[in-house]
Structures are given as structure tokens and as C-alpha cells.
Image 1: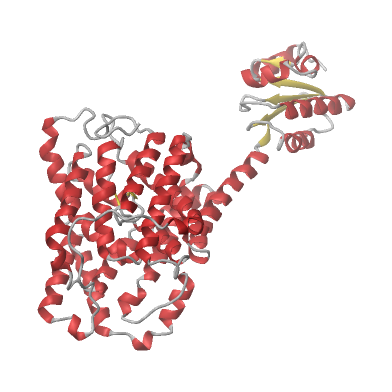
Image 2: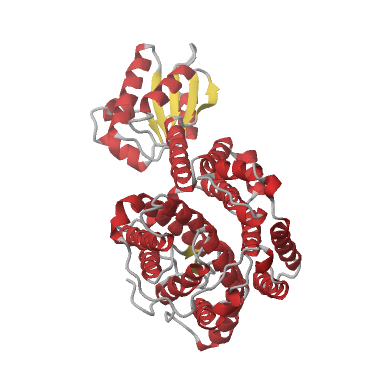
Length: 530
């Protein structure tokens, strides 16, 4: 399933090489500065982010099924990693906990792939993703307040960190704040030139200014010495397995969802089909490799994949070029990164976080489906109040509850009424959990003048045995009151279910079952039958 080269070399054309090289270089200009910023979100040294831009990206390029997908660090994974690592603080250093978490995340993905659970990508609705991403953006922003303001900010969640930061406004280091503000301003200005590698330019300018003016000597924290060289293998701390496993399951879900969403959005018609089960395995292998080489959890990111495709990537070869750039940065550029102010990284993070907020989609959802707006707001609130992992699980649970509630309260309404004939349409599968409720709602629509109740079941894909029995009970109750029960547009599966029950003859006997509502109306008009 994950034969080396199966992804990159599957149908590769020599004509793609130039475009892949140029796209890989352009993507590296965005990915490498972001990788360092994301590592800061995760509470890890910047080289951990660069390791993620090297190792998992290489693994995915060799075996993944999406040509443009760029697999590296993401803001979501960085926040979730920080949350999970904080839960074992004191038991292991952050880097060891993070790499162990990545290995566990990969193991969960590999197991899910072996069990062919790729269908799970369809169980998290857009409303949850929109709300969760917005809440995550606020969590990310709160985590950077200390670096932006130049004060130590503590707290285990959004409210704690914001409250602590507000309490220290009188101690702001204005030079640090100016450094962060300058970074944000330069990034926003560079967005007016979308073809320019804004993050790379900002990092280069920040390093140059810091070195020229001696910002470290003026009290501005810098990232300091960055270990050079390629990452060496490291073993996970298996003693942390039980403590980190819940976080690994949540991160594995996010890794898969983020990656599949980006892969689907940027897939072109000529690209090979995406294979969700294989994606689980490849992403699992990428995360295991990331952890074993000192990185942390990685996924296919929307923004970096967009850059990759916009730059002209034709295959996974572009990701290999980006990974080579990460390796070159580790080998040759590490000493140059030392003067980079942490406030500049924080400013870069704030701009990235702002890009996750999508108010227009909230408005779009609000205008169309109020239940989904509730789910989106719950996902946002969950991320802020419960933390990213717990918030995600609660919001997904709420979304599934909404689906169950809607399935248990399907549309039941009158579509026609004439000469004692009442036509009622049901629009949902009838099964054990909603059958009695539907029957009660149908029965409540029957008026004293009704002689025939026609159930339009054209929108009912199936009827289980419990529902079949309930229809029999409804038939008997209506017959006791002198009302005949007819059926129209009964689909194949419900018909097959009814045929195997004792209720079949009395429910679908002569003059009770019609191919369509029109046929039933014509029958009633020509020769009313009770």
C-alpha cells in the first residue's frame, strides 16, 4: 500500500521537473518561516519545525496520493501538541513528549488505515471546522501575548492567558511590542505583493535589524543558537503512552481531516483519485517518521498547499524540493537564525492566526441553517473554554447529536387534501428511533372529515422491522376510526421489508399501494375506496 515511490513516480513526466522545482522553492519560502513560527506555538525549539518540513514532507511525497498536498507543520497541530505536551509537564522535556506524541499519532493513523476507516473524514461537518478554526485562532493569539508584550504570561487556557496579560499591561516592554508590531505591519504591506515571499522577507529583515541594532542587548528575547545539521534518530518515551494517547487520537483525527480537506480542495481533474484509506497509512508513516527524527505531528496544510499549487506544482516532486530546502537550511543557515527576535515570530503567528478567522462563513451558515450555526458557535466556545482537544470532541459530539435529533424529527406535512383524501408526505428513513414519533405526527394531522389517509413515502429510503410494525399499528388505529390507509411511491427496500412481515397483506393489499401520488388521486377521484 505504501511502496516507496508509488506517490511521486506514479505517472511522472519529465516536462514537470522545471515547474516542480520552481514551485518547491516558492513553497519553501513560505513553509520554512511558518515552520519556525509554528514550533513556537507548540512550545518547541525552532529546529523542530524545520524537522517537520523535512521528514514528513519527504515521506508523503514518496507515497501520498495527492500531488499538490504539502505535509508539514500546521497551526492546528501546533496548538494541539502544546496542549497535550503540557499535560505531561514535569514527566519529560517538551521535545521528548512532542516526538512521542507524533509517533503515537502516526500509530493511530496506521491502525485506522489498516481498519479502512477513511470514511471517518465525512463525519465532521463544515460547521465544526469553521467554528473550531476560529476558536483555534483566538487560542493561538492568546498563546503569543507574552512574546508580543514582553511580559511573562501564564495560564492553561485562553481565558487564563488573556486575563493574565491584561493584568500586566503596566509592565509592557515597548521595544518588544514595537518589534512585533513592525513585523505585523511589514507582513500586511507585503500582502499587497502576493507574488513576493512575505514570510521569508520578514524573517530576513527581522534578523538583519536585530543584528544591526543589537536588540538582544536591549532586552529583546531572540531564539538564540539553533543546532545545525540534519536530525538524528530519537526514541519515543513509551512511558508517556497512556497520558498522551487521548491527545494522539484527537490529533490523528485533525491530521486526517486537515489533509483530506486540502487534498480535495486542490485536486485537479487530471490528478489520480484520492484514496482515503491509503492516506491514513501514508500520513501515519509520515508522523511516525517525524517523531523518530525529533519532529512533531504533521499534516497537509491548506495555506501551504495553496501556495504549492499556485506556484505551479505538478506533482509531489515540488514537496521534495521544499524538503531539500529545509535540509539545506538546517545544514547551512542555522547560525544565521540566532538573532531572530521571538517577538517577530510571534507577529508572524498573529498574522497566520488572523487568517484562520472566517466571519463571512459564519454569516453564510446563519442565513441558511440555524442548527449548524449553533454547532459552529459551540465548536468556537469549546476551543476557548475547554481547550482545543476537548472542544473538538464536544463539538463533533454535538454535531452528531444534531444529526440524530433531525433523524428522529423528520419532516411530516400535508401536501394535498380533497374529498376526504388527505395526502401526508414523510421525508426520512423510518426506523426504530423515529417510527412512533412519525406515526403520532401523522395521526395528529388526520381531521374528522378524513376518509382516506395517503402516505407519500417517495422520500423514505428504507423501513426497518420496528417501523413496519408501527405502520401496522397506525393502520389498525385508523381503521378503528373508519379511515383507510393508502401508500404511494413505496421504494424497493421498504417494499422488500414489508413483504417479509405479517403486516404485508393488510398494508399493501388491493387498492392500498400506488406507484405515485397522482395514481392514488386518480383512483380516489374515479372510485373512492374506504
